[in-house]
Structures are given as structure tokens and as C-alpha cells.
Length: 582
Image (tube, rainbow, N blue to C red):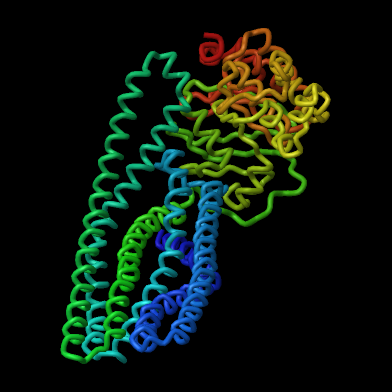
């Protein structure tokens, strides 16, 4: 776990350091801008002493031209510097977002454990943005240091007391600002935690809206979100109060500091130690110092919020994988023979099971938990408590998880359809090439854009009937999560997507629970035909699907209870009859 935490910190560090050149350029331009800003009061003082006091119109015109040129340089240096800083912040945030998404999509899993999808989305957006903003904050801090240093140097050259006030007082102000930012950091972290949880709950409720309506539980869902939202609001208000206190106190300290400079400068002018122009310059610099000091307050707040968000990002990046990734490549070619040896699936005994290559095997269960455990092991979402699972004689723990997922596709019955067209859900590349959608807009049909593989898969799953019932055929949008489709229609589209992938080994779980008996029988025949000669495992208690299997295995209490064909087991095994026909 410690190595994972270090890896998360390394990614965060690289995301900031990766923009070092751009931030350095922005800092250099910003420092030039700040030096120019600090020079403006000095030039105004010189104008007063040399041109105004002496009533020299020529000198006045010359110095006005110099000031105009100075302001042009200030404008461009600030514009270019701010642009470099903002770009560095955005690109750092983008780098972090990519790292978070890569970790979430990692074949080894683990990042999503204990987190709702909305929480992960919040980390990848708001937290990544806040961490990226650290680049801009650091650059702005450098600008402020340059401005403070230039002011202190000129004041030292003009008057040692004024210069010492700036040199000695600035570190004290920075230290106090850092102390005042601590409560903001703690409350900002709590704010982001609550906001992420609220986002997760909202996404969870929206995803289950249809079920909630069916149960009549809308009011309970509203109350749940109201409580979560109120907790998030309270955390946000606490963070806002902490920020307002921090900002107010820092501004009060800053105002007192500048008032002290003005007071000392005025006394020095009265006793003749400063000329009128020097006094104007000193007061102008004191007012200029408001900018750098306010910047320091803002930088402290940004760094406090950035540290809080960085901790949350690092937690996701450092999440321990659900499975230990192997390095061995998947056998080529994949025969598709699966073997379980001593694998515990929730029962007291280990399961020994051979799933022959190139055959359709049905697995019936008396306990749904056994089915879930089997699917998680075959899909390598988790490793079994004991025993091993092998693909063509090679333990899954030795294989690269990404390569394994391409060879063994586990199609869960509760998989998600994405927002987009039906065709894009069956064939992901269809959306990128724009086939069905463009055809629909041009008045064509979805069939004109379908490739033979997609047509076969949709026909086998009887998803082609679903397409024909929609306004624009397969080009019709299905809505987020497929909400515009019925349960049976969604199941057929999901099965078509799994069949379209044509993996060497396909494991499907209850693909027809929401379709009528006639359609189920047709799907069973279509599944058998399209997967002929390739390893297919159907985990289900559906008699129609089990009847077309070459072999059926009954898992009873986490162990193999019986084996044979569907007809043989119906005749000979009472437990099987109860599980399948009851």
C-alpha cells in the first residue's frame, strides 16, 4: 500500500513539474510585469522632482512617453504571463484527469472500491482542477515575491527604515497567512468529500430512477438526497466561512502593514529626509504592495485547497488493485479451455470443473451467490479464496489482466448501456465512423450501415427486432443507461454487444430473464448457432438456454452437484428439477 501511495504522489508531482517550463516562462514574464509595476511609482516620483517641481515641459513630455512605453510593456507581459500560467494549470489538470481515468479503467480494478461513480467523477474534475491550479498559484506567488523584492530594494535605496519594514514585515505576514490557511485546508477537504458524496448519491439515484418509480419510493429517494445535499451545503458554508475569515484577517494585517509604511514615510518627509517625489513614490509603492500581499493571501488559499484535493486524488491513484496483475501473454491462439481446481464459491468445498473448448456449457445454480462468485473469478474481478482458475492450462493469475479480458469476456446481466444510438452500443466504433447516425440524418436506414458481424450478432440476440421497432432503427438513441428501452429490449442489446465482440471465450449470465418464452427459445437457438465451435458458458436457470447446451453443470451449495445434458438431469436429479423447473 505504501508503494501505491508513493506512486500516487509521484503522479501528482509529475503533473505539476511537467508544466515547469511553461510556468517558468509565465513566472519570468510575470516578474517583468511586477518589476515594471513597482517601477511606475518610482518614475512618477522622478517626474515630480525633475519635471513638475522644476516646471520643465520638455522633461515632462519625455517622462510621459517613458511611462506610456512602460504601460505597453506591462500590458503585454501580464497578458503573455497569465496565458502561460493558465495553460500550465489546465494542462496539469488534464494530465491528472487522464491518470485518474487510466487508474479507474485499469484491468486490475480496485479504484472504484468503496466509491460511488459520482465521487470518482468529482475527483477527476473538481479535485484535478484544484490541483492543476497550484501551477497558477505558484507562478502568482513568484510574481508577488518579485514585486515585494523590487519595492523593498527601492525603499532601501531611498530610506533604510522603509526598506527594513518591508524586508522584515513580509516574512511575518507570509507566516501568519500560512497559519490562517490551516483551518481552510481542513474544511476544504471536508467540503470536497461531502460534494463528491452528494454527486455520487445523485448519480446513483438517477441511474435507478425507473426502479424507484416502480417501487413508489421517489419520496424516500428525495429525502435521502436532501440530507446528503444539506450536509454538502453545510460543509461548503464552513469552508466559505474559513476562507472569508482567512481573507479578512490577511487583508486586515496587510492594511496595517501598508499604513505603517505610509506613516513612517510621512514622518521622514516632514523632517526633510525624503523629497516630495520620493514621498509620492513611497506612498505609491505602499499602495502597490497591496497587490502582492493580496496575491499571497490568494496563493495561501489556493495551496490549502490544492493540498486537500491532492490528498483525494492521491488516494484514488494509490488504490490497491483488486487483483495482482500477471505479465504473461494470453496463449495464442486461444483454444478456450477453462479449468477450475479447488475454487471455493461460497460453499465449504472447492469446485473442480472442466469447461471444454469449443462447446456450449450451461451452469445452473441453487444459490445466486455461487453464480456471482463464479463470474467474478472467470472475469478476474477477484481471485478465488483458494484454488486456481486456468485458461488453456495457464493460471489466470499469471496472465496480463487486459489481455485476459479480451480473451474471456464475461457479460453480466446488469451491464450498462451508454447514452447514444443502439448501433453504437452494439458496435462502439459505429459512433466514431458515424455510420448509422449519418444514414438516419440522410433519410437512410440503420441496416445500410450495419456490417455483417453486427447483423449476425443482432439477429442471434433478436436485437434486430428491437431496432425495427424504433423510429430510426439502430440509429435511434437509447438514452442514458438505455432508459428508453424496456428490460427485455435492453437484455437483447446487451447480448448482441457481447456476441458482436466475438471473444474466444464468452461467459453470459441470465441473458433472457426479461423476455417472453418464444423469444427466449429463439435467442437460445441463435446463441448456439453463432457460437458454434467456440467456448461459451451460460450461467442461468433458464430451461430454454440449458436445453441447447452441450453439457450442463449444477452448482449446489458451492460445489458440483450433478453433470449431464439438460434432459438427463431433468429426469435423474430432483435438485436440478427444483432449481430449473420450479
